[in-house]
Length: 80
Image (tube, rainbow, N blue to C red; front, side, top):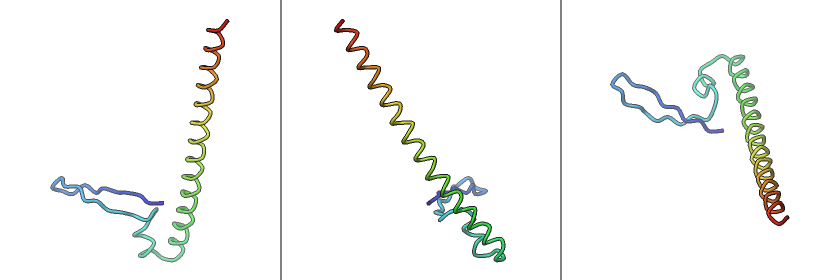
């Protein structure tokens, strides 16, 4: 999982920063028990991202199927 963060500087210039995921900086500086919990949370977020992508694909497929069925119904009705 790759996240992009933009930080607002005082002068209004936004700096681009690439992060490898949840709590990237804190994982290196935090005590082990916090780092462990952050890694666990990052894993959960990764699983949720994958599930959301899967659900989005399923929804898109269902919409396309419904549209195709609707078009077929219209063609059938036109022939009768």
